[in-house]
Image (cartoon, rainbow, N blue to C red; front, side, top):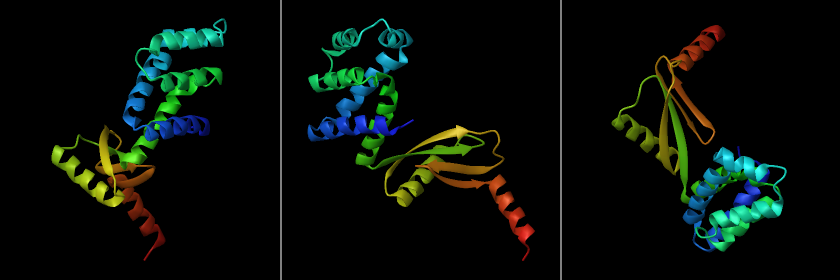
Amino acid sequence: MITSVSLQYAQALFEFAKENQQIDEYASDLEVAKQLLIDDKKNNQTLHHPSVSIQSRKEIIEQAFQSYVTPTFLNFLKVLVDNQRLNELGDIVDAYHHLQDAQNKVCHATAYVRYPLEQQEQHKIIQKLEQQFGKKVTLSTVIDENIIGGIKIVVDGKIVDATIQTEMLDLKNQLKKGW
């Protein structure tokens, strides 16, 4: 979940990466850092153990990343340790990707359907969404057993619900109102 704090750190790193034309490289570095420092339970427990000093945490991170990332990115990780924000690295990664998508005019859509969509159907949906939003769209599908028929699409917090359940509910509400 993107928080105001994670967004601030992500924006600072993103602006630096943008100035140095390294947006994609920093995105990759963030993913690796997240995998090693947050997703790996053993490393995460070690770095957050009360007996491990801040200086020791920074030394561990320096040894792990020094040969693979830029000095600036390494300093970014150390700042997270100094400010006790390393546990927010996952949210920072999400915020960074959000900024990257906005820069590249990309949005993500999720289609909820009863049965898998065919390639041609996916292509048509993507084309319509790209026309509507003026951005490149990536589409993922989720099979939802509760959908009788139709499709529900969520894009950037907006919901397009063309399921049979919604159409039936609309019809029911119209009948209640009368003509």
